[in-house]
Image 1 (cartoon, rainbow, N blue to C red):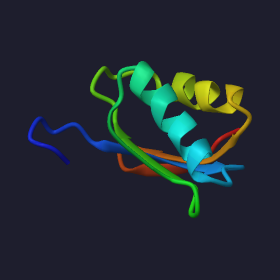
Image 2 (image 1 turned 90 degrees about the vertical axis):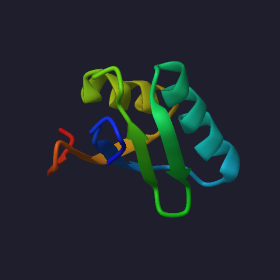
Image 3 (image 1 turned 180 degrees about the vertical axis):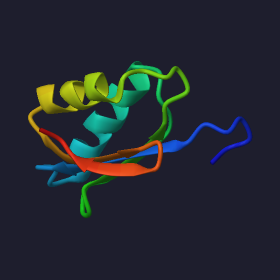
Image 4 (image 1 turned 60 degrees about the horizontal axis):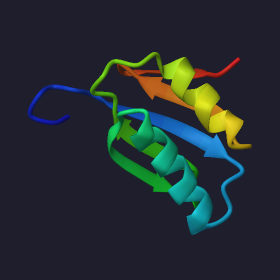
Amino acid sequence: MNEQNIPMAELIVDGMSCSNCAMGVRKRLEKQGMEQVDVNFATGEVRFENVLGTDIHLLTESIEDLGYTVRKINNDGTEKKKS
């Protein structure tokens, strides 16, 4: 957690196969106002600060629009499968 007590949102994203994939996801999230975006294509882990409080499902839809699958979401300390 950062100084402003903004929790890090975590996603597991399937389908990223290279650093360009990771960069595309990172840029998409940054355009939507997310900060401290970290994307690891090898593990599929995506972490970011949702400083604007954007609905996490809108963010996952945006990532899926790029052609990837969001498998797990962990924000607010809970983990669940995306339906």
